[in-house]
Image (cartoon, rainbow, N blue to C red; front, side, top):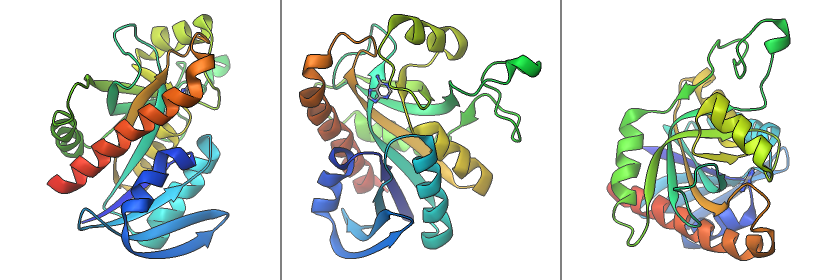
Length: 230
Ligand code: ADE
């Protein structure tokens, strides 16, 4: 089994790349792909850059060039739920694009044209394996549910409430659903793993850089645990 791993920022993939063995590097369309072994498993790791277009370009290229059996998107996210605190883990069982809106021509908010879905489902088998791997991480709350993506850093209450009201999502980030969309089109299994770095309401801005480091370490630990079990 070959596992693709995508993060948007250096901090989200650096810990994984540092631990890889037999690395082969290749740059395509400004994204560097690191092929090699991690925890003894075949992996292909890439930093895609921030936002849905970067994420989609990276996922599609990874699929065409490296044929991963599954793609995991790892990183940090803003919490949309008062039960979720800094460094808690969220595992997606479905993803939505909260900024997809063709309601002006009669569609439900969030309906993704072409595939005719609001929620793109993740592979239950992968979700279960990742959830089991997450439970091995000490002193960490683990949530499974909807992850919402859009080309916006969510940092105010009205945006937060909009996403919760329409999508009932646990956290917001900027890439996962684009990767899910590409995987759905290509019939590739996928799942999103995120650790909470902020409350998505503008309240923790002073601490954001340090919370990102803490959160990214958590999602990296989860990926390593998952790889040991597959
Ligand atoms: N990634 C981490 N925090 C986020 C937020 N509040 N909104 C969007 N993406 C994020």
